[in-house]
Length: 154
Image 1 (cartoon, rainbow, N blue to C red):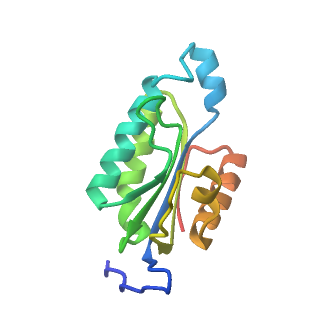
Image 2: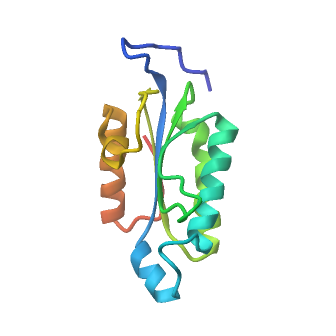
């Protein structure tokens, strides 16, 4: 697959991929299994590791969500100069690993401008600051309404 062109905007954004990962029905799972919400548990600790590995492998930037103190339930990651399809195999592997633990996870990867600097961690901006992030968040909500536990590459 050809590498994306380096397309810069006036804000220093480049073409790339936004990935949003969110554990499905997590509140119910935590309650059902008696896991802590405030410390890493088997699912959130594992997702923390998987998110970090993905970001390192593809030189991504974790915009929001990686939390080693509490565990990661959701994450927004940007990958400059990477096409969404290039990430598919790794995203499917994350879903497979989480499913082996009995946890559903919905993952969305969309092409768009990435690299918007953020001065502070802000959940709302993580999901809405760029058109690609807004699209990824919308596709995530729609997938979760249809039952979740899937990988969407758009």
